[in-house]
Image (cartoon, rainbow, N blue to C red):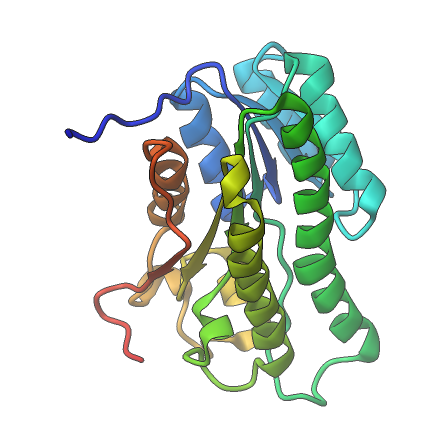
Length: 247
């Protein structure tokens, strides 16, 4: 049977961390594909800019801290209020500090765990509640990292632990939810040309735009592909590397 892509026209997608980088590019590609969005971030101005460009009929915004369960509940509620349903969620919001185990503060350590792990768990829980009300499945996409597969660089132990947790969460949710038509995908890229990648000296004197890294559109395109897969198939884990990177 020839593969027929699933249309995103009129579907409702929630994207966290949509104020910039991969999240923002994913939002743009999803809007171009005809989806309606609920976008979340701590940065209100970036969300409002996206809404101003595409209109309130296509974009709803939620400003909030993804480490709080109430923020994920608000994202889902905004989708139901604005568009009547939620079809997919993209847990893209993430935080990382580069350095050895003792090189960042206790507060930074806590933030990494709460944003990357709890933020993903809260969004998945809120989404599953709504998917079950609707009764016709849905998609959960988790932005992980190759760091969670023991193949990242050094000096990122806590970050790698949080990404490993996301990957294991994704696999476990797939086993738990696939019988209900709910697909779970973990996208696990290596280096991407974003301000996130450039932060805290991760690449020394090398700027991401000058290095052998992928672009935000590469990762956003992978997210869109997983959402448009025929409903008979699913992608559990997708690792992504630039051709020049080694591991």
